[in-house]
Image 1: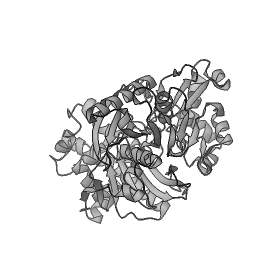
Image 2: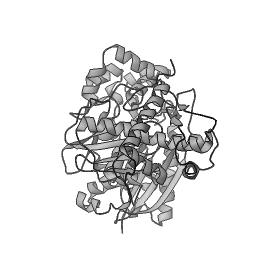
Image 3: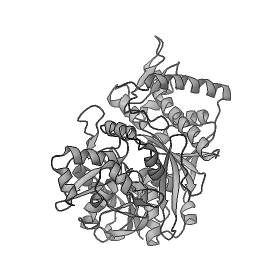
Image 4: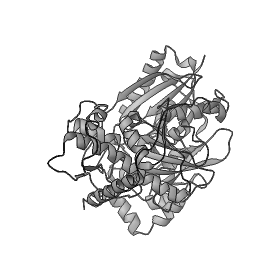
Length: 495
C-alpha cells in the first residue's frame, strides 16, 4: 500500500501529514519554529530553521505511520505564500532571514509605487493591490539593504523563491528551482493572465529576472527528492489557501471556503475566468491541474490576524493558558456586552488595505470582563470574514449557498455559530479539517495517478457539522454597524 506525504509549511509551524488511499490522515507531526521581530511591524523567519523543522517532521510523520520513503507515492507541498527567501545559488545559503508575509517594513516602497501611478498597471496584470503583504517589495528591500546583494543578483548569483521554491531547492539538493502558478501569483511579479513573469512588473519592483524560479503547474512531477525522502517524486505545489480550496473540493465556480489560521483567507472559485475585483479583493490563480491545460482562478479576501488574536490573549494578555480555552471563557457571557476588538495588529487586509491601522478594543465599561474581551476577540474574527464575503458577493454576483470552513479556529463551535449568524448562511465544517495539507497531497496524487479524478477525490469529502444561522436580520444589521464604528476608530492609527 502506498501513501501520500504532505509537507505543510505554515507561518508558525512546519507540519507533515501521511495520507492513505481513502484520503484519511494516518499520521501527523508538527514543530513550531522561531518568530523573529527585529522591530515593530517587522516579522522574519530563519530559512534554515524552516528547512530543518520541515524535514524533521517529515521523518517523524513517516515514523509515526510506520512507513519509509519507499512507501510514499508522491510529495505535495503547501506553504505560507508571500514570505520571501533569497539565497546564494552556489552555496545554498540564505543572504538574510526570510521576510514574512505579515511584515510591514516595505509599506514606504508601496507608498512610492502608488505615488508613481503604478496602481492600475499592477492590479491589471497581477490581480493584486499594491501592499507590503506580497513578496515583490520584500525582494526589492533585501536587494537594497543587504550589503552587496544587488550586485550579486545582477551577476546571476542569487535565487529568489517563496517557501515552496526554497523547500524544493533543499529537497533536490539545489537541482530544481521552480514554483507553481498559485504561489507565483502572490509575488506581484507575475502576469496572471499569461502565467509568466512580467517585464513591466519586474522593472517597477527592480527585481532581476535571473533570480526567479521557473513557473510550473500545481500538479506535475517537478523532480525527485534526495536525502531521507530519496527517490520520492515531488508532484504537487499550492500556496496554503489555494491548497485548502482544493482540499475542500471547491472545484466548481461559485464554491467558497474560509480558512481560519494565523490569519483568515476566503477564496471563491471563479473557474477559468480571472474576475477583476471592484471591491479591493485579490484576483489570484487557484491552480492548474495535471492533464487539464487551463489555469483556474479565484477571488480572495485576506484577514491578517485571526488565530493570532487568540495567541495574543494567551501569550500577551495571559487570560488563557491554551488556545482552546478561549471558547469556554467567551461562553460564560451571553453576548459581547458592547465590547468590540479590532485585531489590526499589523494593519488591515481586505477589503480595507490600511497598513497604518492598529488594534483597538472599544466599548469598554466598568461592567466589561475578560470574558467579554475573549468573546469580542472571537466575534472580531467573524466580522472581518463577513466584510470580505460582502465584497465577494458584490464582485462575483454570486450569493453563496454555504461557506465551507477549515483551519484551527473552525473547531470552535461558538465562533462557527456566530459566523453563520453574522453571514446569514450555513457554515459547513468537514470531517477532515486538515484541508490545506490534503489539497497539496491531492494535487500530487493526480500527477502520479494515485487518485484518478476529481470525482474520486470528492467522494472522500464529508460533513462533520453544519451551523445554521439563527440571528434576526435586524440584530445582524445592528451588530455590523457597531463593528463598522469600531473599525473606524482603528484605521489610520500610526503615521
